[in-house]
Length: 279
Image (cartoon, rainbow, N blue to C red):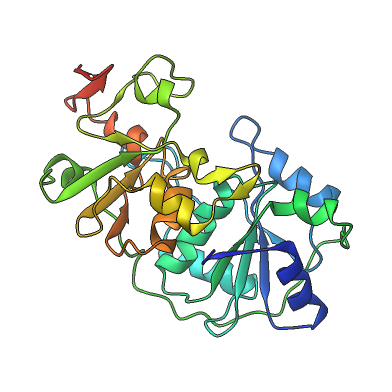
């Protein structure tokens, strides 16, 4: 599938000594130190580690959500430190097919990079294939990345609130129970943004792999390709696998609501729906 490569493809690229940047994005929402510990215990040779909180998110404010996008200039500097250049591919991976690699994928391609891929099956697939694992840190050659002025294809809370539901569809990527407001492990309010449709992000996967394009077309068949698709989740992280899948099957007007539910509820007057009833 477009934007996704196999461990065999990545190993071939590494084995041929092709110029490539590999980014390890393993993380854990409940334990902020877990991702770096995973990396130190073993990673794909040549990979650098990007932390969800320190590298893939900006500083939390009153509004903007739990994982706001970082300052573009600072993030570009980190990408260049990692070796990212416009004319060389970038591969990002997670522990398996988790949400964090897709977040990094979205951020880098939203800044204009044309060759960013997610490793199917992540580090676990690489390790199970018996491929080499490194434990020493990586010191890449600095890259040169000319980026867009800002992250492309995002929407603000005001744009979500004032959207035209005839031409714009809002997706909530969280688990169905959270969407309905039956359970909410992270935030003080529960439910979903009025009018949002639920497409759980893990449903783009099957048996630990990304679903093929035919399966994804069937999965998203109720979403017209001629409308704007706004994708949200809890904090702009698990929305990204849905964005990758939608773009891979030809949806052109797909946008991320970066702050998502955590930003929406930071405005007390914003309504929520629970069990399809407005709160």
